[in-house]
Length: 601
Image (cartoon, rainbow, N blue to C red):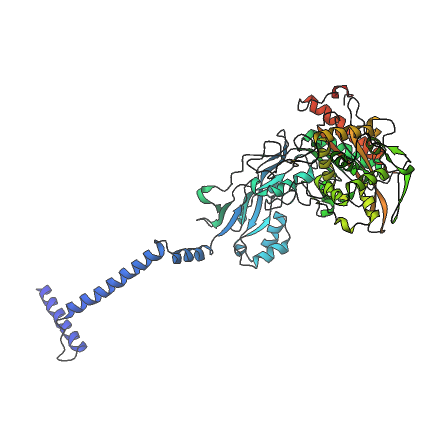
């Protein structure tokens, strides 16, 4: 009974509320179901539209989706390119000259550096960077910045645990180029920058081949807020190239050459020096030295201290060019080996002045002209060639064109038009004054002259190593003079060293016949506007009977007097030749007859 009474009371109260809420005569429409269906349909269509838009932006590969993803990702990640370790550089025998080792590099996410100055200073002190650098970065909105590149692992270990700052400091392994031989063949090898790009030498000209494919990684934050590095497939260390770049030089020969050049330069008190050893048969450089040199692991910033003298020095080397003009005249039938020219007893007047010989001579054969290095008779031979042919000979022997190594800074040389030469200039050029050539150009010319007359391209890669580096895109060999003339003039040059009275007696090698030519030239100095310095040089081939090696030694601005090429550069040539031949015979690479008679070294 009580429940029934309660239900009746509830119904009466409900009716009273409805009566107060709605005016009299009001009643609900019978079409409320239709309105409810319409409203539900509208809400359903809106929801379907939202789902469609989500699918368009989030699932379909549209340009708009990519743009939005890029914008979104910038809020929490940044890209960084990881350079791959470069391929090794070795000598012709596979001994390592340059290698890449992974070193840690420190980076920061500037936008996440806390504003706490004390903390910033503590971070800077621990990481070994100026506090001002951290403070400057903290004020930027960058997503990534390098802090220190290629930190020695021992130094990183001394920094201790960096996890305290894991949300804005990170470490990436980067390849660092190391040069185990330090200053040996430094100018030829060259070096790289922080970003693994070749800056000089072989590192520069073969940069693309030495480098593999870089990997683009992302610096981001993981679920715990730590800065981390991710890359496609997890590959955060790019694979290095497996094929080494094998240079043509031999590390042992390079060591002989640099040691002899350094000692010779010190004895002559020279400002600088160059030495080149070339395989006459293949055109390969077995050694190329520039003094002074430098440590590739810490190259000097001053480019003058890194000057690659054998390629870059443009020097008037004097009498060393005389045999080329004698050979051209013989080859063209303008003179014969038995002909005698009058050397005017040491003095000859020409339009514009006079030319002289160091020692007076009368009638001389071509062989004697080379032996005694007569300026006057060489000029008479140049007159027989004529100015145009004389200029062509300079070109054909490579004295006015690039040697072709591809190395930066190669001296090309230049010769003005013959119709601009005064007679005195023509005479001076005949004995090497007024023709600026590099030591490498001279070595190439000597290789042509004594190597059968064939102009072979200069190689800085070991023979057979043209692939996968595509080498120097070497052209065909050219014939400059006949093999017969080549043998004849080489025999004439042997008198310079082997016969009494020759100017190159100190370049002799025990047990071998050396063919060569001395050079003693004046050097024009811009500071004094005069020829106030000297250049001493010697170039030659061994053995004279069947040349295998062409060797050139140049000492720039020696202070010892007299600064004769035979006296100062000749002994350096002898030491280089003797040690090189002894070594090559000992390893069985070259069989040079007579070398077994050398004194053991």
